[in-house]
Amino acid sequence: MIKEIVTVNRQDGLHARPAGELVQLCKKYQSEIKMGKVTANISAKSILAVMAMGISKGEKVAISAEGPDEELAMDAIKELLSKE
Amino acid sequence: MFKLFGKKDEELKLYKPVVGKAIDITQVPDEMFSQKLMGEGVAIEPEEDTVVAPCDGEILLVAKTLHAVALQTSNGVEVLIHVGLDTVELKGQGFTSHVNAGDKVKKGDKLLSFDRQYITEQGKPLVTPVVITNSDEKVADMEKIFGENDVIMTIKVK
Figure 1 (cartoon, rainbow over the protein chains, first blue to last red):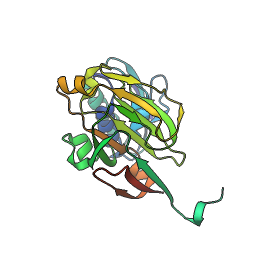
Figure 2 (cartoon, chains in turn brown, yellow):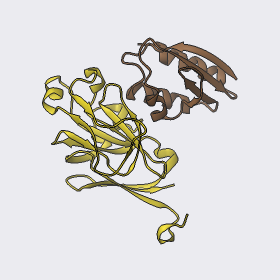
Figure 3 (tube, rainbow over the protein chains, first blue to last red):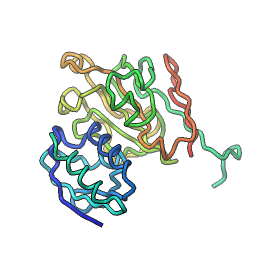
């Protein structure tokens, strides 16, 4: 399992559109991917769970990925969350 | 728990959360919705200013910017109602929430109010997607009903 802390740089935070993009991305990977404000304990493959965290631009989020493609998944997630 | 009518699949009916004409989600001028990236569903062209619960359930989230609300039914189906497009940019202006996450609601309970005139003046389309965000996991079959009908979706739950 790999874990990282990533700063969300998306305008308006993780609302519907970026949450949808994130979930679509995560579903491409076999790995189990979780995230959260303090510990990564919420499935990053659920749109509403991601939206419900209410993450604003500039906030840090903990991410974990576990599985055969965990490094690829983590790189892609970091790229998505850090772009504006 | 006994099952009503001995049916294997449970049926869920969703009613219009806002008065207006129902169209297919594929008609919404925003790829995130029209390509069903947020889930299967329909959209309403609002003719009134109040969003009500489309079915019984528990509120899962109210967006900080009050333009979206989601609930979960007792059989685990998640319904997201997103008032207008790009309305996150209004930062809550023009919206009032009547519920909080965790509230139990009944079909027809008031969830949000919004100011159609203000939203339109800000250049945001009012079209309001109503989507099942976990349709892959929870929906075995769905019938969508467009137009003036009160029921907008009949769902066979997995």
